[in-house]
Amino acid sequence: MTKVHLIKIEPMTEKAFKPYGELLDSYERPDNRRIISPKDFKSDGDTTVGVIWQPYQNLEFNEMERHFGVTQSFIQLSGSPAAVAVAPPTDPSNPYDVPMPEKVRAFLIDPAKGFMLKKGTWHSLNRYVLSPPGATFIILNSSPNPTQMINYSEGVGKIYTDLDTDTSPSTIDYGNKFGFSFRLTL
Image (cartoon, rainbow, N blue to C red; front, side):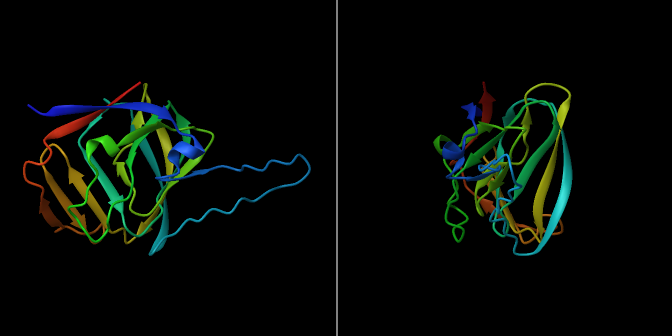
């Protein structure tokens, strides 16, 4: 039987989210002029823009991923409240350096702000919608998109040279190190 590691969803504040990335928001808001707040989005390949529909599902997951060549970013367009799970970046040259469960946190996404992940930040594959029917997000990404994934339940990982086109990723066996899943809680 797979063990379940519970993660309490917390507010996504600038300070709390800083180890994982930054919020996409305008902090200066004068009433007499327009402000453009530059953000440090980086993409080693071509920047791609997509739209994700994420239906309401359960709040349990067993996979996380990290991207090596992009500060992947998300902006919620519509829908129900949602959360994302994240863990700090680990050594990108060591595929066995993956986050332990106590390093994984979950944040309630503020629909009035986007968020940008640092290169290498581990995150859940989905945004977890907290009530039906679902939510829509803009995703800023990269092509190619070198990515590492881990399945904590099965104890295996994969490294893709490009997540969208690599049909034969390298496989990593983590042995019996894990054997659990995560569940987000309110």
